[in-house]
Image 1 (cartoon, one colour):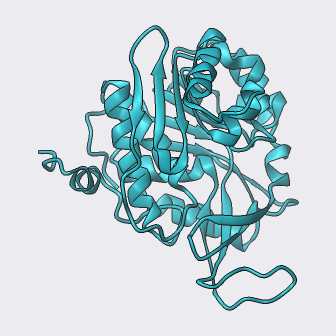
Image 2 (cartoon, rainbow, N blue to C red):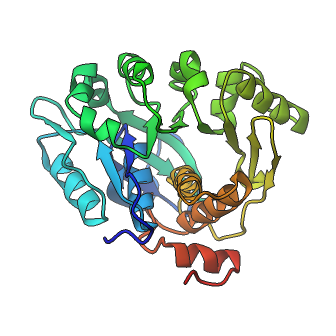
Amino acid sequence: MVPLHPPVAPVLAIGAANMDIAASTPHGLTAGDSTPGTIRHAPGGVARNVAENLARLGHAVHLLCAVGDDLFGHSLLAQTRSAGVQVDGCWTLPDAATSTYLSLHGADGDMAVAVNDMAIVERLTPQHLQARAALLDGAGALLLDGNLPPTVLEWLFGRPTGAPVFVDPVSAFKCRRFLPWLDRVHTIKANRIEAQALWGHALDSDPAILDCATWLHARGVRQVVLSLGVRGAYWSAAGGAAGWAPALPVVVCNATGAGDALMAGLLHGHLLGQSLADSVAFGAACAALTLTAPQANHAGLSVAAVHRLQGRPAPP
């Protein structure tokens, strides 16, 4: 895929690459019983998904992740490369299994339950990253996901770099890994559960949502985007503007990957010098488009497709 935008330093996405195995059913889910439905597998993982979305939006992007020397690992790298992502820096660990993410979706398309086998990510060390120092030094922006081990995060945040760091906490369980480094974070995109775990309080009202963003800013985060499902997203820039971006109405096929598309939209806007308000609006449309796809990435994602969904004229 040829980048569509003026040449800039590439984005470097570091974190997980999974093979997603998704089961869905139009029927009600009954515990302890078998339910008719469909089962599909496709590439996934937060960092990998964001990287693919950015490539489809026309940006140069490198992925750093670990895969096993197995069928899923070879397939992940091949499919990610075919989407336009540079994967030459990824590590293949012959004595580990490629990450796998198994999810079950009910009739509404939302995830009912999921299990992940991501032990391979914990195998990453600062030594692995040190071997990719040239990529880190040349990055225009970094995307880090919360699957990274604390030792790797400590090493990454301890390096001097002028590249802005975008963070996806991934889960309530892993998000607290970023607490010591919030003053090094340019933009954090968190859902309600992750934000609650970071802040330590419930996001059960609009004042609580604003207070959570203020708390994150006080700890050094420059831009906060809180993804709140059907409510849309609340966004806030430190010492600047804030507001709400509504969720666009679409028929949901699969909710997996929508947050990763939102993050790609935020990075897209930042790389083009757009305001946070415009970046969030673009990211929300990326997420809406992804909700209509059966997989975690929409094969038709493009700037033109997002603008059509927003009712905007196509870019020149």
